[in-house]
Image (cartoon, helix red, strand yellow):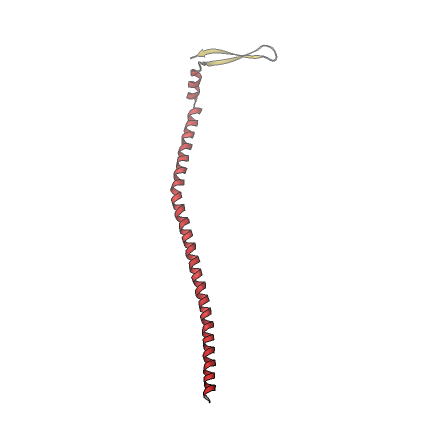
Length: 124
């Protein structure tokens, strides 16, 4: 074998090896870039989710206090409604307007269209 043929053979195999290594490096580089992008995307997603969770954890006590205030006000309104409906409140309101209680009520008809109510046995 002559020196030129050997040199050409060496150069051809060397160039082929470099091309093969370069294509393998390009594929590995692409995988590396894809992997880094995936890690960065997942890290960003983690940060967003963590921030959202922390924000919600801060707002829960505020919402709970609002709910407890509403429950307390509802209970107060229920108590007031019960007190207003009691007969004692009705009696006190009637007495403050100088109304009197009747023991018995009798109705007097004066014709077909007129009816009168007359109280008997007034008590104070």
